[in-house]
Amino acid sequence: MIPLSWYMSLSAILFAIGVCGFLTRRNLIMMFLSIELMLNAVNLNMVALSHYLDSMRGQVFTFFIITVAAAEAAIGLGIAITLYRSRKTVHVDEVNQLKG
Image 1 (cartoon, helix red, strand yellow):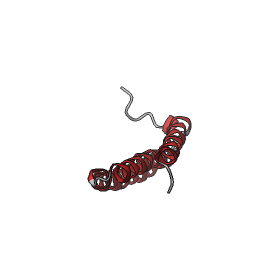
Image 2: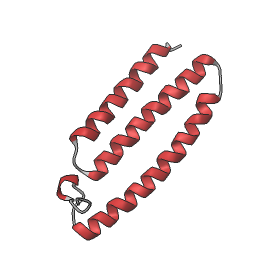
Image 3: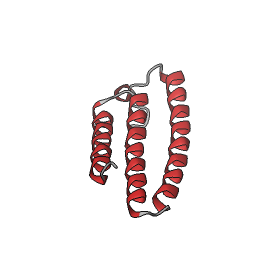
Image 4: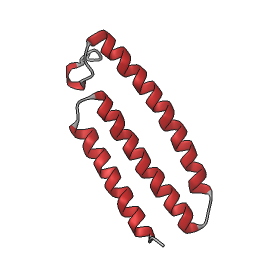
């Protein structure tokens, strides 16, 4: 049986990779992928703790997180497509449409 600390370590590594990817990449698609990686790290953490504590709460909560992530991906992809159609780029640095 794999100890809980290994799951927590893997989750922390995935979350750190997601944070680094979000902060260093300027491509909107890569930023959304980094957010998804962070959400999946949280899901792994929830499922591992749920299994360790012998409770279904973490696994049920994970389904809600997956639902929110799917909605976020759909909305984000729609925004990225609209941004590309209007500005011909998906780089965040080149988009200054919301500046006052």
